Length: 137
Image (cartoon, rainbow, N blue to C red; front, side, top):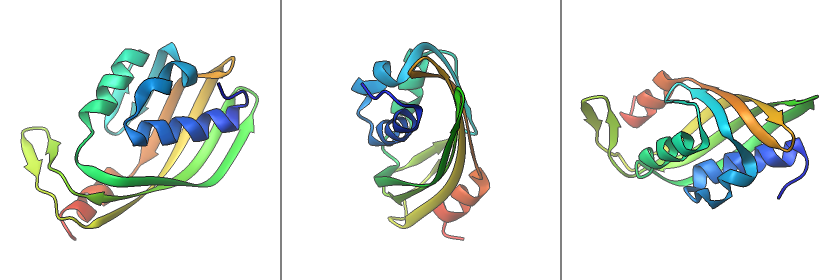
């Protein structure tokens, strides 16, 4: 298990993007509270379900960390995710059909720790920019 907050955050981002959630118990507390424009959860099980539900629309996902600072029990991260839009994306009652095009999404994340695991995080990104890239504008 990773033992410093910077490593835990980097690994958490990679695991959440990979769809391989076996490491979630090592990275997140059981009662983790997480928010983003597309996720609101209050447990690790809900987090796994929400992440699994997003699986399929994007392939070749990669994250690159632009900056990562740790202050006490908080980590502040700016990162970019690149991906290919290769599967349908469900948006409420609508479906955005894949274009096969590349997506680049800038994001910022604030993670709070309880010991060596993330107990809460807030992930910020521009969902309109993501949608514009998905529809080719």
